[in-house]
Amino acid sequence: MAASPARKATALKEAMTKTQLIASLSESTGLPKKDVTAVLDELGVLIERHIKKRAVGTFTLPGLLRIARARKPATKARTMISPRTGEEIQVPAKRASTTVKVRPLSGLKRMVE
Image (cartoon, rainbow, N blue to C red):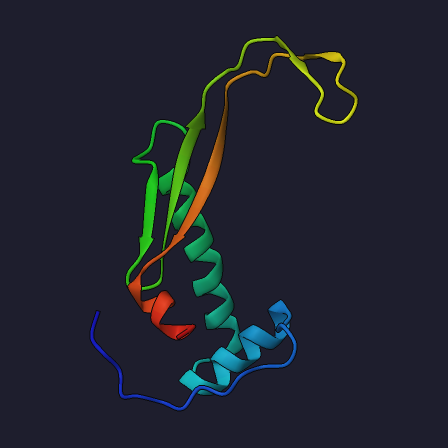
């Protein structure tokens, strides 16, 4: 990814809504809002194609983040002693499941320094 010229990034006091995000990107890039919306929608489709079942399982947005599909194994039912009451309780079994992990990359980590 080519490094863009350093711009002064000001901190925001409130999170942007989707409409505000699209308007801001449209204004800063000079693209119409319709095109920015299409790019964001296509990015969502591309992420889905990478992490869905029988796909590669990871998607990397270079320099910012990595999205990965993670498999959680099944757990067996067990008994344990409650730390609060000291009595035995039955912990039910859980089925295996799939979850999503989002990990920051170096570019994102540098932004918070």
